[in-house]
Length: 304
Image (cartoon, rainbow, N blue to C red; front, side):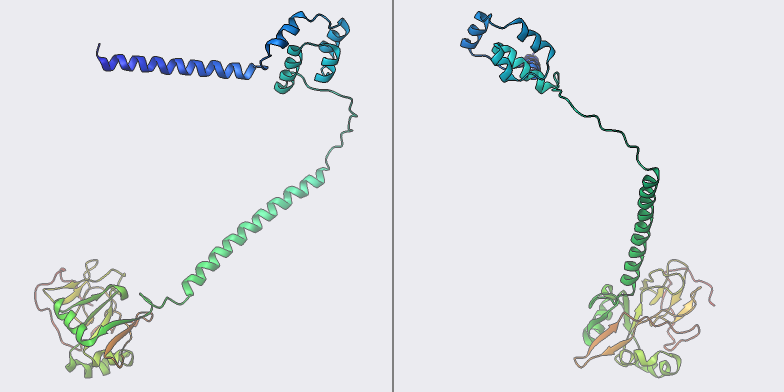
């Protein structure tokens, strides 16, 4: 037998002894009526002065008080027993009482109370539901914050944007505005004047040589990534394809990529209002004449 096993057995034995002692202690505490001093014990043993009448009173009259017992000559142990039984509920003091006549409740009153509870509960639930719906509507219609998607975003200086487009291989993604910013050829601006019904809203951006496109495909709302080889936007969901300025080239999309109003401030910074979405140009609009410059990333889809 190893030392560890011996130590374990000894520890278990100690735990068992402690648990047993605690249990006995608790039991003694629950049934204890107190400890008497030695002088009191001697007095109880030598006392035989309690009368038969007092004994009968102790056994039959549960309302006897400690003072009355002492006056009757009861011993200290009897007084302690009475106090313990009273605390534990073994003795319940009784006294004369006048019975109260039973009056049955009014059924109509009870019925009204139940109806009121149900009515108030139903009205409260309707009120909570309508309140939640109202809060949701207000939150939906409330103007967006001063920054982030849904607000006017300062994309940066035009020169910096052009550098970012070049560094991105022809595409610059702005996550804060959920938009793509690409280069718009200066020789295509004249065509845009006649082809884009929304031209006044994007005029400043196009004249500065850039365009801001919403990242979502107008077909079914997928996020449209760029294709570095073809230099087009190609939707991976259903194969819609758009040239670099978001004009539709193929697939099931009903129009070109949607876009945002643009303006250029006095500091030559591009301000894009993402709180307004402009529907993309109709099918067949091709102001830049750009064709795929390499292999497509998505299989060619049937054009419309």
